[in-house]
Length: 422
Image 1 (cartoon, rainbow, N blue to C red):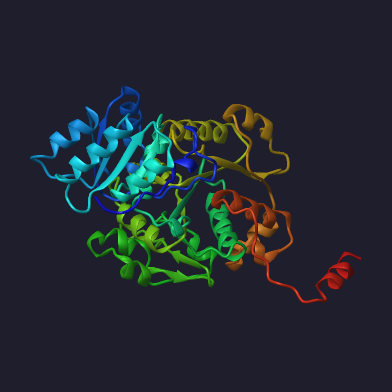
Image 2 (tube, rainbow, N blue to C red; image 1 turned 90 degrees about the horizontal axis):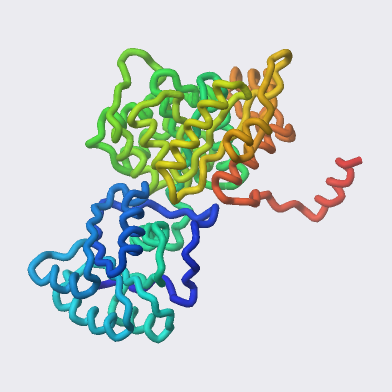
């Protein structure tokens, strides 16, 4: 047993659902074995095993607690992670001493107990326990504890994947994705990459005025070559903080993929980029569903009509069911206010989906058309337009960053601002 305990019992929170901005990086391919004493803890661990962030982990659950673990490993190798539930103080320390004699080097141990005591915590640290969690535990407690074993605390924001998808074709989801990514990179100063997953008809290259010779197709059709250096060569730099993994947007081949075709690409991007924005095409396949479920945050873009309302609700309901330990998907309304078009008001959307849209983007054909034709973002066309501010607000919600990074002004800045106001 190695490593050190990550959480002091004094800092252990009650068993509640995760906070809105609680970002937990997924665990790698590891083996996890839990030895539980109560059916409640076993149920929580079982539920945790179904969470997307432990999707690559191989989880096995047994009853019997510490005694069962000691007996099991007398004649079998230990996994990467052992989860032990125990009730008594003396039993914990005595059991860990016995377990250490049969435990392989490198195995990490998580202990679930009912005693909240600093002295016990220090004894557990001294014995090499990786984490001590106060019972009762929920699924998200188990997920957080296991995943935190494999992610550095200072790298909390690294690897956040944001998936943007349209509720219906032609609603402007790609435009929203590209402008939000621009705001994340420029205004929040967060290194980001846009991955255009619409390989046949993607528009990210056009929107950013980029025409790279290589892109995401080179990676998805060569999975054995995918690593950090290979992905870096495929990235096209748009700004200091924004890169593009462009789609070929050609029809010389068909783009039929298996459900896990993009997994290695996403894993590599997570390891190198703080923020990854996925521009997901409006289609329902194994890999699009997998990409949505595996994302850290999801934005659905919808137009204010009945088909979009139905599709948004269907997507939200499915993702809530598949991601019980994540916050619900966010959605925004786009192209609102087209003259003479009957529209469903935002209040009706909110009533049906049981949440408010995070933004209502107005129909501005002149501005959006000019930006698209010139290969520019809305912020470049009109920096002070209300839509530019909306994209920034969406970026803040999706990344969990509430403040923008503004350059420092000179001592004349207050005077200049007053003159502008006049």
